[in-house]
Image (cartoon, rainbow over all chains, first blue to last red; front, side, top):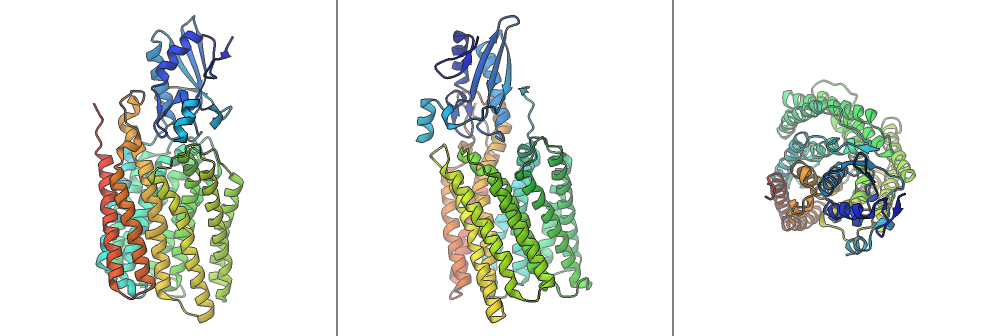
Length: 113
Length: 427
């Protein structure tokens, strides 16, 4: 059963989630210069054991973001690096649409500078 | 929606970059010609050198850079792929050949083969662009107000070029009841309002909130602006042909002013509701250009008033009006937006597969901030000096000083663009 963790990300395995998030912290939105975790782009990380699979439900700051595929490809790459034995899959969603409320405290501080 | 990695819908940078390079060189050449021909800005606007500079600025600079950027941005706006990269190369090749021939024709006032052949190439370039964009929008997943703005603007671009070619023919074969000078305002406004204004608002209303990280969106307001601008242009054409009283041109003038002010409001709202507080220099210049769009409209009202009251044009005001459009509003938005879009295109080519690495620079790191600041400073002072020189023709030094600073603007712009293009990845 998936439940939100301290980062407000739905997950069914907190330990693997932290491992994945540590790597996702390196994925930067190139325009904003902030990582996708603090931006609040990651909605859910779901882990399956048989077969080993990680499903990442995420969004973008804008549906028309020209850097969208770079961010998605980078997130995919980061998940594969974090959990090499899992097959990574990205599900892109715009429901709910991204908003300021999804920023972490660090993200809010970064954008208010 | 499950996304497969590597399934990019991006147009290849090989398609887009030639447009940017060509446009940058045309801007430099225009500024040099402006400096060498500064004295003609104290004469009538229908002058071969002014015609040449205007077309080099309008097609070589403004249109070419917009063509390049739109091949990249329109597929993103429509959530699809560019219909044909080959057709984009064809558009570039035809325009790249046609523009210098056309400009040479105007500069030497040879309305025979040079202007005609140049015009034919340019019309074919825009026709292939119209087909490419039309098919891209039709095949896209999302049909939105921005895409409609873009398609309508490209349609006006084609009409403007086609009508312009007819005006060139009219010099040697009497195709129309009056001489070509009579129809010049129609040709100029179809291009400036129908092409540039619609395109800039259509794309700008998407890019400004996106780069400001603003959640502001107001499609209803954009539809009002869309009908306002098209209404202004169509009513102007109707008045031009069927109404014999100049006072009626206030109607399209006011419609245009209201539409532009509504877009200024749109941009302000996007700025007000931005999530990122810090606004970078290219965005500042782009936002300044939005307000600069209002300036020519005030001069347009002065022109209409002088036509109604004194029944003659104030030549220097008409010249200042044209200068404010091409070297003012259009140049300002391109100077700003180039350094938001081009770094992305180059960055995407070099770093797409390395975006998740710690030492990967951001797109903005490809731009030299120092060169940008020097460019911006030269541009603003040069623009103001030249306008003063045109409106208050007391000394040629204002025109020459302004033009010289605009040459420096173009040099800094080209330098920064080339620096981005020659960027090599960090090890």
